[in-house]
Length: 590
Image (cartoon, rainbow, N blue to C red):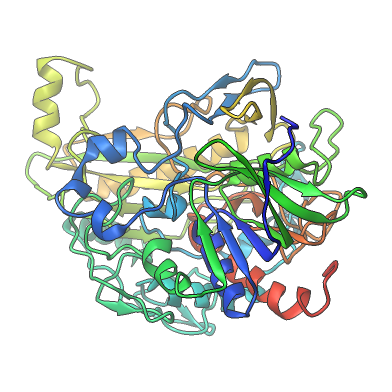
């Protein structure tokens, strides 16, 4: 689609693509520094007080099943295949993951999991080689160090947690291991801004059983407020009341930290900032030498092409869209898995989830009351916290019992042997709705040579542009890891003493159909080597220095921990890099 833009607007200092976690933070920091900033978001504007008012916010059909604040696949979707010799087909219904399509992005409907990555996650390859040697890593594994360390990013984790009011208990405060927190976390410079969530009955049973093995349970960090909280932008959030509709939903209580509650009301007060919703960016325009971005082109709500010139272009949208825009704009060399050359689209990865379900006859829980990452976890089997010698895999998982709110349509756990339909299924679903819980294994995933994102040669979106194509499957490393950690979860489950249980490690191919997590990463990865990364440690394009790309797309492989907190920290880090380094001397920072 190479038609001329209908309208060319007045230039601005910076244009930011995407008004999610990363985009809103960067917009606020740059606007505060005095730049004229335009934020472009393909989705519609939301008003939390109106759109998520009670009782309408608790509509599972609208938000969870019909995906009201999630990407409209009839206009733009992805195509998927497990292997390069297969034909990719379009994703027609949201399943495995749920990218957002509204102001606030996927953080509007996230589950508030705000856990930092481990120090090992940033130096996966070098630490693995140092401890175990090269035979520990699969030959086709392309995992790599980030080019930034946990210690460099720690102040920005702290900044993000303060902004999003994260609740938790420090387990490692300036190198001192503290009781009650996660003893395996990287050292943090200060305590959480809010206290941790309260432990549920199911969480207590899990904690007691885990402690019998010598493990150290803790409450997961949560970005749903555990008390009323006012953040550094002087925005106040309410306390989570565990209303049961959190993940996939907006928050009726204003307790969920998201761009709508933590940044946008303060950002909107800047006269040098303008937010344009329903503005779908389709390319970044370069100068004749392809060394500088001069503008972006977007399609507005009326279908018109608009060109917005800017001195600085920042892509801060979802993983798929960041990668797609780089490919459509010709920034960076597209990845070729056959030659193992190029970088844009390389190192796509996901997460490896499994679970053990426990069923009881003599214990009742209240699964409906939950939300905001109310969960009890152990980290003994996360990252490289345990000895991997002789196990045949790298990485791990944290084990957790979550109380996120058991929505009545989706949550129907039944024991093994239950009929898949009919009266027997109905009876079991009613019996065990209140008499079951799961130990979830939230696992990492390495990157591989044949896992990548590129432009689909056949399918196009509503604007006539190629869709992004995903080629991905679970590998032997992830299956072995899943079997190991799921077995550890089963040992704990047996100690709890259920009447029945089911153990479900990852065994077969990756399926895009059932929901797993909205934790897609890679494609525009960061690193220290332009031959294996698209952006440098400051999230700046190696090829076009006035383009920065921020988001989960920067992760070279995936941690077991959810990505949102790290995306927020990277946004704070990149904003400081732009203000303190780039603006003083525009050009390559490395």
